[in-house]
Amino acid sequence: MPNVGAQISSHNKKILGENVPLERGECNCRVRADCPLEGECLSRNVLYEAKISSDIENYEEKVYIGLTEPTFKERFRNHQKSFNHKKYAKETALSKEVWNIKDRNGSFTIKWRIIKQCPTYTQTTKRCMLCVHEKNDIAFFEGDNLLNKRTEIISTCRHRLKHSLGIYDVN
Image (cartoon, rainbow, N blue to C red):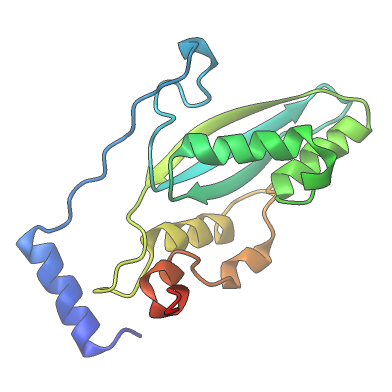
């Protein structure tokens, strides 16, 4: 439960209209047709979904839910790195699945889409809505084809660290 100060601050923030709506990013892909998000690859603070399908016989389409605070394009490049280099194969559940398909001599296709855009951790509310929504979408996902593990729900917010003084070197 948030303390009284956090509740008042959150309430005041809503009333005073300090919540600036997040804007979708543009696209700077060299070939617009190759943009993974149909012209919105420079969007920030997004919760995204990747649907992976394969030509392997009896392969059921699987879903991966992820988030990114910097632009989606930066996160997409990291995914591409883990798909192309075996040493990064265990970085995410999505890359594990891609390498599982590759090991079975199959090919894969991934459809990307933005689920929603949310603000990250703020000092006033002491919450990260991006992480909260990711956990919510993983917890309430219907079906058994989700690649994410349920243990991701108990992980701490990684966006909170940049607001703490412990990350600064005093020397």
